[in-house]
Amino acid sequence: MVEFPEKIENEEQLEELISRPTNELVEMISRLEGDIMFLGITGKIGPSLAMMTARACEMAGISRRIMGVSRHIDPGLQKRLDNAGIETVRGDLLDTEFLKRLPLFKNVFFLAGMKFGSGENLPLTWAINSYLPALVAEHFRNSRIVAFSTGCVYELVPVATGGSVETDILIANGEYAQSCLGRERMFEYGSSRYGTKSALIRLNYSVEMRYGVLVDIAERVKSRFPVDLSMGFFNVIWQGDLNNYVIRSLEHAKSPALILNVTGQEILSVREVATEFGKLFGTEPLFENAEAPTALLNNSSRAFELFGKPRVTARQIIRWTADWISRDGRLLGKPTHFEARNGKY
Image 1 (cartoon, one colour):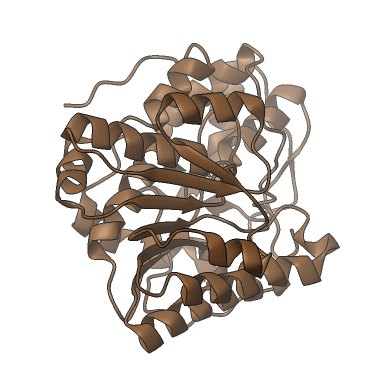
Image 2 (cartoon, rainbow, N blue to C red; image 1 turned 180 degrees about the vertical axis):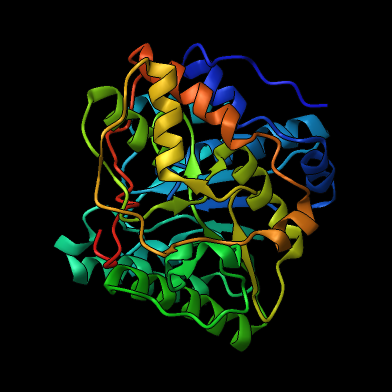
């Protein structure tokens, strides 16, 4: 039985929790051949994903070269990655000459992407989300590739359906979602043309104490701002569970590419979650608009069959989040815009 703390005291403890390997991951890493590269390591997920990988290698007693690539790496993160034995390389992945100089590691995680503010610079959004994957699929055609995608490639569905599944017809709403579908198609093309073993992770949504849908709702409740009910239901998964699933998906990568929804077990109600935060904060939440009959929801049954159920429940994360925000814990200041129904982020 996995034990977790009643509350998360600080960022050091948070970072340890979201990068803590499971026994199953350590066993998988012990079987894995080849070195490991993270393209776009400095986003919200990349650092903890790489740290979990490094910790799993250490626990398995094996030596793997682990490299993170990004255009900018702040000094604090640089120090943490260095201490974990993770090499870093700075450069613009859209620079084809730089990309061609990257070593051909056996295992590659593609984390680069653009969402926040994507509507303000659509050409760059398409370049990062669709053009760059084509370049990566070409350069790393002999590697094993795991690439992040998004549940936004699905249409909005009634709650009663239980969420979209991997075989559903894709209806990408808006240019952000369309560019992400372009990302998938480029990796699928590379997988088909070169036989590249690939896995595409349709994520919806990752959360921890500093960002995510739960933080967005909690902040509004605590500050007495209305909570928008337009997107009345949602899924989330604890980032530590997400990291575990994503790394382990390396072993299931295949050609044609594996498509995998990754999210939590529960379908959560925005109204009910806001009400729970209200109880924890000792305040009455305010609401605006009304729940629509459909929402952006993923069904992760396939991932659960491969990797087991998430270790951390939504209820636990809600309690952690309320405590963190009550103590004015640091936030990343990156709203998810989960309430958007028109595909504009």
